[in-house]
Image 1: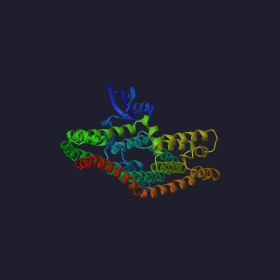
Image 2 (image 1 turned 120 degrees about the vertical axis):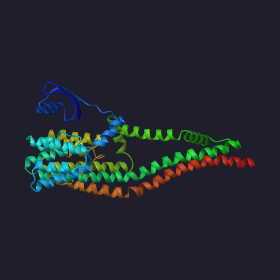
Image 3 (image 1 turned 135 degrees about the vertical axis):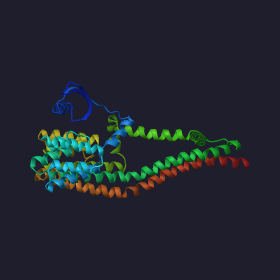
Image 4 (image 1 turned 120 degrees about the horizontal axis):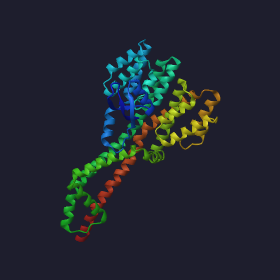
Length: 405
């Protein structure tokens, strides 16, 4: 979370700034460790409709691909015998991302001051997830930091590849839909006014659908730039609305019930849950803490609630599989059965890994064929639009021919 703070420095002057921290107490401790006395600490609220803040976030964020490279390189250098501080120093020189370089400098300072890598990473929750921090801490405690970092890199790589496949499958229909809107607007702006002038000269009576198309064509022709501005602003508004917290429940409800997309979303969340849990349990993280972290990793609100219920069930002594059994519409039966077998045999992490591998393969197969499935649907939509336009513009011509006869 981001906080704005005021603090009194050693020389008595008031310093102000913006800092990323887990909470107010962590930030207070950080300021005191630097010799400052906190005066006020306020969480910086983000407005989902603030386009400027959104663009700043895009420019300052650290990409998953950069984190994967960072983690693998850090693991490799530690295995090669380099000290953690020297490895971080090398990574600072290698990275081209200014934000990531600042983060690495801060982490290096903490390490040189006697802190641990996991505690230094925890100060940047927008860069390093709870999964990243917890697996790092487990690696430090077990004395196998390089191995833990290698596992984190593999987990990030698998999750990143899975997300890219799903997004890649949805790009094609998105591009076609956007092209349809642009071509439609241009056709309305340049073709319809010409036909409208012809109809006006002939004095023919126009049906309602034709009058609507002519009105839209005249508006687009007169206000072409305004039309595209409205379309772009509407798209930005919808993106901002989709990111707003109060819309999450409604959007997630729709996503898991959409044809094709819903099945893909369920399998994606199942694979992500299984792989994250497996990685954390193999790293030595307790099951309750692993479930809590997995709840932060999955994006869908309803899956978060199931994992929260699973954590409560485990704390009360109930089987871990019980919460998954109670929600077969979101988590497939295979998930709960494999978890139950894992609990009985003591190989829960192995069973979860098998679930993850199975559904990752399923997603790969579905995304490979998704464009083939979507193409006929797009053809029907495009054909319906073109047919409506053609009928609306041709029907007045038939009226003219009837009058001539």
